[in-house]
Structures are given as C-alpha cells and as structure tokens.
Length: 455
Ligand code: GDP
Image (cartoon, rainbow, N blue to C red; front, side, top):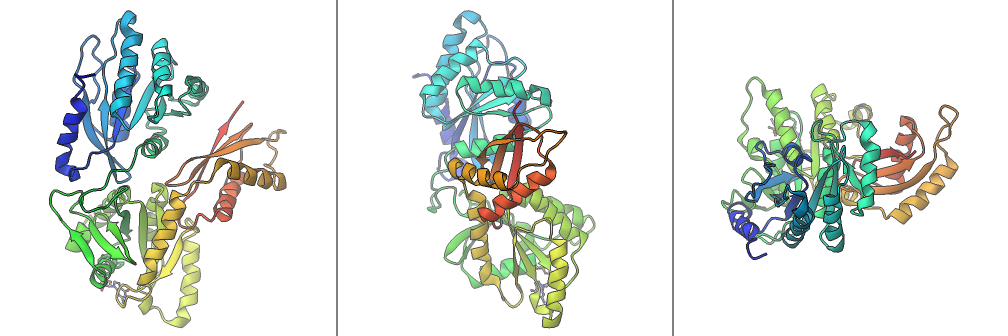
C-alpha cells in the first residue's frame, strides 16, 4: 500500500490545467487482452495505448485526462495482473483494493467472448464489498449473438453489464454516460464554480444568422464575468456570461468573436465548429433567421444537435424584420421545417433590438431540467402499465410482444430501456417515446428509448 503513490503524483500534475482542483479518477481494471487499451483509446479518444499488456512486466501506472460532455476526468490503469495462475487471484484482489482506495469509480472490462474467469470472480468479490461505483463493461460484443453472453455477466453482482465493441465503437454513448453518472462532479474551482461549474451552452447556427450579434447583446447588456483567465479551468475559448442571475458558460465562442472565415470552405468549418461546440456543451441554442425560409444548412445544424443528444432551445432571430401579417405564415412554415425537434421551445428574438432575449435563460433552464431528469423506476412502471393496458403493442407474426419492465438507464439525455418478450415496431416505440415526453414533460430535451428483447 505504501508504494502506491502514483495517483497523488498525478494529482499534482493535474494542477496546471485544473486550477488546483483534483479531477475525478476512473480506474480501469481487467485481465490482459480483454481490450482495455482499444476500449480506452476508442471511447476516450487517446491515440497511443494506455495499457500495454506485457506478461510478467510490472509497469508504471499510466494516467491521462479525458474529456467527455465537457467534463474532465482522469483515467488510470491500475496494472498488477500477474500472468502466473498461482498468484493470479491474490494479485487481482490486490489490484481491486488499490483501485477502490484511490479511484472515484472503477471500470471493469471483460472479454465477453471468454466470459467471467476465476480472476474476475475474485475481483468482483472485492468490488462488491466497496462503496466505489463500478461500471461493468462487456467488451467485444461485435455482433448481436454475443448479447446473451454479455447479459450473463449480471451474475458477477456488479450491476448491469454494458455491451460494447471497442472494435466497432458500439455502445460508446451508453458507456460514457455510465462513466459520467458514476463519477462525482469536479470539485469547486477557485472561482467558486462547484459541481462542474456553470452550465455549458453552445450557440450555433449557419453563418450570418446572428450568433455574434446575440453574444454581443448578451455580454453587453449583462455583465460578462470572466474571459481568458490564464491558468484557470476557464477554457479561453469560452465566455462566461451572467444571464438572469446565473452564470452560464458559452462554449467555443472565440471564433464567433473574431468573425473570421468568410472564405471558401466556410460551410465545412462552420460545421466543424458546430460539432466541437456541441461536444463541449450540455444545451444548444440554435439560431435561425426567421426572415428567410428555413435552409438546408439550418436543417443540418438541427440534425447535428438532435444527433448529439444535447438539450435544445430554438431562437428564431431577426424577428424585427418580420412584419405582423407575415408572422403567422412564417411560423407555419417553420413548424413544418422543425418537425425533427417538435419538443424544443421556440423563442422569437431579435439580437439587434434585444427583443425576446430575456426569455433565453428561462428556456435554457427548462431544457436542462428535462435533460437532467430521472424518473423513479416505480413511477415509470406504473405509468407504463397503464399505457400498455390502454394501448397494447401491435401483434407481429401472430405473436403479441409483452413489455415486461422499464428503467431509466441514464439521463443527459433521458434514456429509457424497455425489456420485452419480442420485437417492438418502430411506430409503437415512437408512441411510447412521445407519451413519455408528454406525460413527464421533457420539454427541450431529446428522449431515447431502447428496447431489449428477453427470450
Ligand atoms: P453570425 O455569422 O451568425 O455570427 O451572424 P452575425 O451576428 O455576424 O450577423 C449577421 C448579420 O445579421 C449582421 O449584419 C447583423 O447585424 C445582422 N443581424 C443579426 N441579428 C439581427 C436581428 O435580430 N435583426 C436584424 N435586423 N439583423 C440582425
């Protein structure tokens, strides 16, 4: 135990870019060749191998920072698996103890094609006793046939196995959501932004829709708190803006302020910028020019947001250019164009005059509340029971699929899993999704519904 000082050292290393705050630590454990390196590289975006499985060689622990959904954490490989069978169980248990002592969450990686070996049983025994959250990853689920083998890992008593394929990238969203749910938020930084800091907003939209005008309006009329403070957690490309008594972090605004890129390839760069802003954000404000018909480029931005799983507020800008008698027609047109995201609030604003701009912060709050929400399992299932009794799933191939149970597997965005005895048609799935959204009022947030068929 006394020789295990690597993570404290790492904590010091982290000072440079985290304002003295220690990042939450995720320990990765697993036997050699279960796919730890490819998993970590693939899902946490690091190119070089984190973990080298060299039998018989005791390696230094490796750690580095990962960033997902705008949250930073450290990933640490605990090492210490001994290749010889005699010492294996003991060394595994020791590894688990170390992980538990020093990490905020433990990621256990198992090769689903092999299943749980004696070593993993030993590991599970130790981890089951600890209070540290465990994320159980069933790796190498490269095709559907391995889903049953993944489900068999429930028997380890470490909770729900998350089936992934590091090879194909499947399951990465579920895995990363589970990791973030298990890890504590970063502690307060020196500006007193605790619990992960201000909520993170991406301001996106096609060129000339009024993004920089809106940002200027927001920072001009309200106090812009901090910009570009060296050596703090504030990423210099972000802007902290106080709106409605709350500080918000508008991510990736450097480009907006500079007003560069009127050159060729602009659209390509605009979409790259949108993508990176979305990755760093929790909620997006999509700006649309309501004085013009909705364009393909608007649709592309909306699709990117919808695919990103972020919360969304639609701001229909340049309302000052639209006269009263055209307003209704335009609203109708937009409604048709925006049918991909009927759940998002729409605000008529003018970045020029400031009209409607005060409604942005309340809309962001509503969207984030929906995005964060968790529905208790009991309540979810009593709701589901009534819904299904009133509208049972359609019969398919002479068989009536039964919906056994539902659980909310994740939030941010709310993600539900339905356990069924058969295939549920897409239409029925959408029906459930729509009713979930209406009955639990998930305004401003996407809602995902996954179906798991149990034989
Ligand atoms: P960005 O490319 O999305 O950052 O767009 P800009 O903020 O640079 O705005 C593009 C043009 O639209 C500028 O000439 C702005 O003055 C104008 N603009 C932005 N918002 C409004 C608005 O609400 N009303 C009017 N009339 N013009 C606006």
